[in-house]
Length: 421
Image (cartoon, rainbow, N blue to C red; front, top):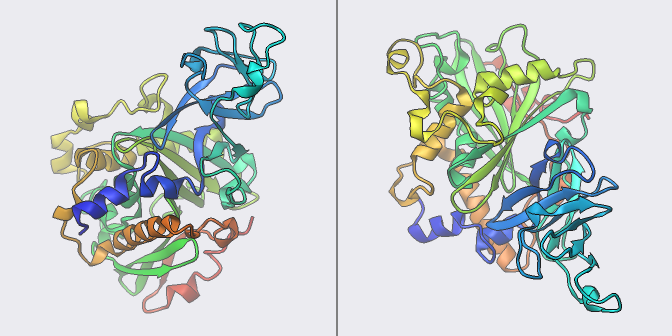
């Protein structure tokens, strides 16, 4: 368990907070590329790490990420005109480019130099993998752009989506890194021992710290074999997990899945979900990806129109069906993703970790907290937290499969956990 003080240090992410400073040392997803589909299109609101911003795609296709409010009279730039390489405030016509410089000030005399003295707060952006990334740390401290294998696979082989969660980032992250709960929360067929995670509900966890965070294996005994799931945790809030062998049927592609859990503020989180096919000859069709998303409970029809928020939510108890819970599935809640969110949101916006009682299958969660709190200490000393160098994780890949019982997974999966793109 954590002390209340440690829990505060772990979960608060606004400007000036220890964990907020940690997040500001990394490139973070700020929006999906599809949210800004065309140059000179409509701006979009972005809230990240407790800051209100506006993103817009300029005439040349570059993305600007600036303060949500004009520095003149604090009018909302969301209503601005995106035109001719800049975002123009509709209140008095002041116009700003993607760097935040004021390039036109028509409400002032033509010979005025005032515009050269005014800027709007802005953050650099980088676009890759269908995601618009931003760096919110001190000027001149940005690391190299992110190095995930996801960003190197062809666009035909990947899919990204986004959902909104009413919970602190740490709850969402810890849920994703907890392999033991999948035997219970995600048991979709009661009594079916052919589902590998039902065969052994108390996996043995082995966690290995790395320069980027850690990798860990959840090992389940299945007869004369071990079912091994190798995850990666990449600082500060990225999870990679492999295709679930033997559980998805012959029509399912071997894919890598994962999430970026990005704090909107202390109590809400943007969840960027991704999947990609790692075989060059096997593209990931949009129809296949949408079906997988729908099965998880976050398909296009599962979202409130015009938002990334789920129709299944706390207000309607996530469509829980108690009869289904008694007879078919462990929860009675449809959709694996929705099951996760129901538990994470149901804990409250920020869970009190001082009241927990952690067990052996919580090792990954314990190490995650240790690494994040260590990173806060490191940043406060002007040091370098893990995973700032993208080369530390560029070559990793998640994996899972059956191996002979007693075999070292590090040996059996040696090639499986290496990125090939």
